Length: 251
Image 1: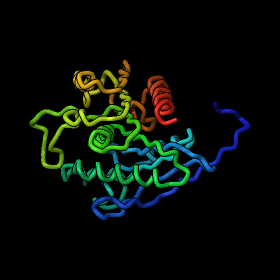
Image 2: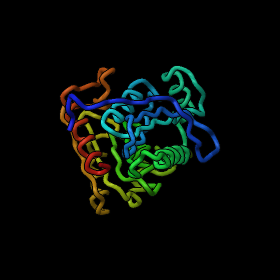
Image 3: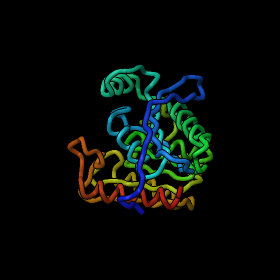
């Protein structure tokens, strides 16, 4: 419960994380000041890259009492303006799923190694980052919760598979061992409502712990307050569901 006389303090900075392939990738890390212990959240950024919105979201997590880290998933493509880096990554066919899963796991292990971590760590991503969060949560043990914000490409047709993305994340669903929250818009085209329904049907068939929420009048990226896709009412309600879910699952 927030009260106006509470002490508030935060540390936010760029750090490096040792990835499994031996590369030290940049990551944005934010945490509340104080002894904790605090639960952790790994944020997987979207295709617009490691940008200002995601760093704001990382600090938002810290404001709500989480150790939050957002790795630069495009670090190996070089540095520059986020849009330019994203364009380079897009021209190269994206990034490899195995690499993303490894980067996420490295961040999870880093958070758990901190003396002020409670030991519980979740993962959150939007757009392509939602897809990556699903991949990581299904393929790597140890996650305590996942938040998928309109992750496109969780459901894939065979013609869309390629060497860097050889398996659709939905086909890894049996490996999901933590609760999943999904937030979607009914005007989205990636994922479409039909794809969301397909994902939900598979989770239900496997007996997984999940909750999906579909927002009317919202399209892709409706949390992004710096873009025309922003929908204020739906975003406020969606964020409330995110923090309620994380509080229940991570404490």
